[in-house]
Image (cartoon, rainbow, N blue to C red; front, side, top):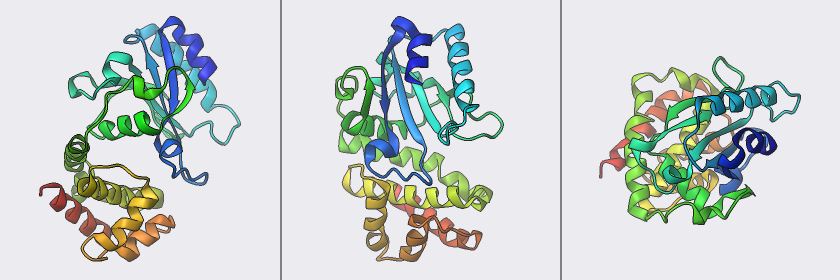
Length: 243
């Protein structure tokens, strides 16, 4: 992918970085995807996006078990420096093999990209390019708190209205551990790996009220029968977000 991105971008290529769980320290080969960010000198032309799309489609058709596990964005240097919702439309690719997945398209980055920037700045793995802390301004604890407050109102609040996505066991587990991470950031103004946040939330979230649910989520052993408990945990997270 690095070679393909460099070829398609030419002088517009500034760097490529691994982020997400690979950077935060909670990568799980059975369940995690490969999060990346490619930094460009300027916005991409339609022609360049088409070339990158073709590159990603070639990779997705490959035989590697990771061929459809890439997820990430192409972000120009000026927009990466600090999150601005007015400059948050970037080419993005989702993991997976469903319709519209493993294809590049322009999407709006939600406020959780403040957290992504923090992880990338502090822990990003350099595939090529300068150190990520030189490309991203320091992110303050209150900026992280505000980002997860805003994100909580967008997601997971939407699951209270339509919980059907939780029928997918992997997504269900991801939801619960992400709630733990939101709560940790609200409490501490910091970002930790999902397992660390989950261990903290097992006792910190209303005196262990959801400890068993969190334990099943960490073990990726979720069932639809857990949905009421999960929705209760979502309501608690939203309540904490408003304090």
